[in-house]
Amino acid sequence: MGCNRLRLSIGWVLDYAFRLGPRNRVWGMDLTFASQGSRATPVLGILDHGTRALLCLKTLKDRTTIGVLRLLLEVIESCGKPSFLRTAHSNSRLMRFALWLLGIHKQTTDPFCPWRNGRIERLFRTLKERLYPWWQAVGIPDNIQVDLDNFRTWPVLLCFS
Image 1: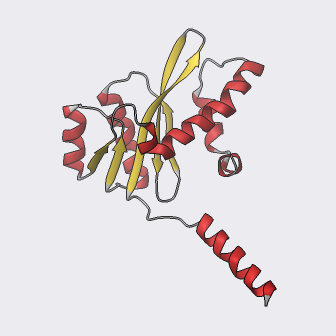
Image 2: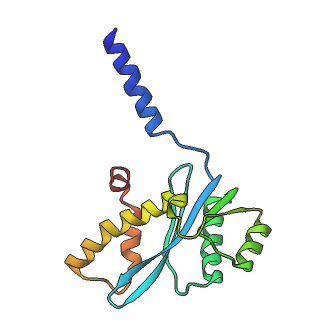
Image 3: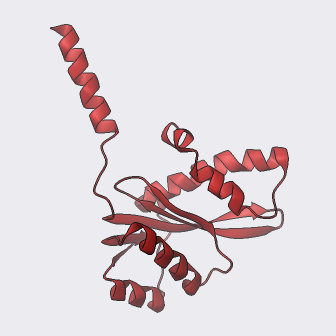
């Protein structure tokens, strides 16, 4: 009897721990900066909240709304369209208008409240914990996109961090 209870509880824990939510319902999007010596390169991250899939992790040439929208449209073209897009507080009329045209509801977080978009913020923390020691040991590359692409292929390290 005790062994069956143990099996049921382990099965419940595994089912709860690896339960995935609906795909393309809520995406989290945010910017971070990868420091390269004296300059900082903006990096855009887009994460699906339901499946925890990292949809986009790319450097931006410029930090404009147009640049962010270009990458967002690329991700929508390859992965589908979300119902909601959770971003940091921004008042860009162009971004609001583009999301309205696409039929995406924008959810903004309050300024200086990163815990409201915690999944993407945690991803950025893991990114910096993994890449910065590597860059200190090997040196910072000229094109960090290669390292960002390698980071996207480390699913085991992301799951158990």
